[in-house]
Length: 279
Image (cartoon, rainbow, N blue to C red; front, side):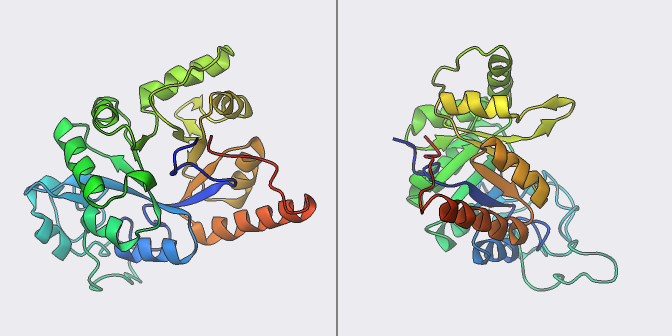
């Protein structure tokens, strides 16, 4: 049986950082917007504050998105919540989220606010302490069945997989490289310790997602979710290749597009999807 996080008979749409093109990334402004637009899930990034609290923020420093400067780890969770995380969103003539009270939230708050929503959590720090802290928050929120943890590096994911086998993890960068090589030489992929791929279509000069990669992944029972997909043309092409999920900054575009494609497919096939995704 597929893990509940990946179990779906249709492609899933995730709001990347809540929908970073629509509202300040990784804030409740974005998460509320992505959720209200009907995204199947939210994608977010986590770091640890000075006082050891898991908070939702992408960069290791604060100046790109907030009114603060310096490292996330130099501030307490309360100080980060009081920051203006909408300060840099927009442009010089329209800083429309400044002063509206959107701070850097705690992971615990996000999991509690959206209790029935899938959440992709990207570990931005590969330390074992970070992995343990995130795992504790996920367990406390009773969110093991609806969370998928990802990281570019393998060290933290190995700890999570050993400590909580019920929790879904995606492939780390080195695991993706190995799977990609196996798909090139058409060497069967054995069942790995991860439950799916959350990957870019292209990484540097390397094409990751292709019809061949998707086919090889599905033969191994592994779904493929792709980031960051912000155009309808790209989404249609990837869905045509059979990918299982799209991670997007534009849920306002892709949620209705995917729903429309599904409705057309159902009408064309007498109400049957004809596929079983997320195996």
